[in-house]
Amino acid sequence: MTQETAPQEAAGKKEYFTEEEKAEMVRSTHRSDLRRILGMIFVVYGIVVFAVGLIDPAADVAKTTGLPINLWTGGLMFLAGLVFFIWDHFNPVPAEDIIASAEESAAQAAAQGDKAE
Image (tube, rainbow, N blue to C red; front, side, top):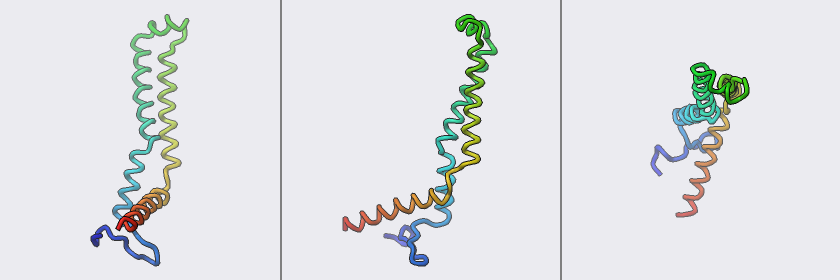
């Protein structure tokens, strides 16, 4: 192992990552959180469906016996997307959990590497 990738001993505990690497792991995990991705999809599709309902309201009303289904569906999809964003904002994945999971994976990989030698 090189000095850069070797685990650091700190107070009896091995440190597998630098503080910069830990911060980047947390940022990367928060950026790729499934709630953000689903929220964006629902918001975009909700806007599109709502716009279709505004542009041609007679098309969906004729097929649904008077109910403007595109307006309702688009609005509800938009609200569902906002719920995902709010959920992610007020209940993010804790940084400690992200780092602990990464360190556990690194420790397992190191243990398997030691067994192979």
